[in-house]
Amino acid sequence: MYNEKLFLTPQEIYNKEFKIDAEGYRPKEVDQFLDMVIRDYSEFTNIIKKLQIENRELSSDNAKLKTECRRLRAIIDTAQDGGGTSKPNFNNVDLLKRISNLEKAVYGKSE
Image (spheres, helix red, strand yellow):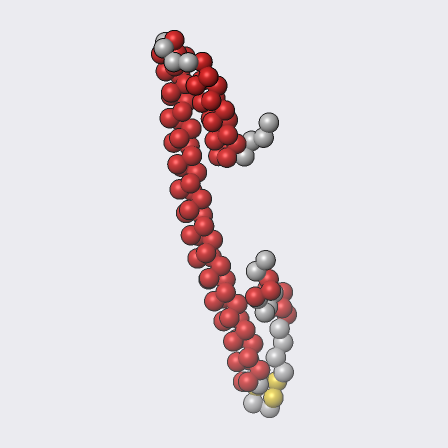
């Protein structure tokens, strides 16, 4: 997914060998390599920021769904403890279906 944007693998960085001139490593070759490393690190930083935002959004959605699930369970418990005689029976079935769907969304359970 993100690999097409990256120039180097960790193994390529580790194995990189620069040619040596009379005065040492060739500065142009080293600069080009370091430019690729900098681009990769910049891309990693962008990826991390995007994933952190996505993680926060998903955590927020998860918390909302859990709250809704708890609220619906409380309604069902109240209806079953005595309030259920005044309410039609189909509401309980509807609530149970809704809770089941919410649990699937929150916990990823399938039937």
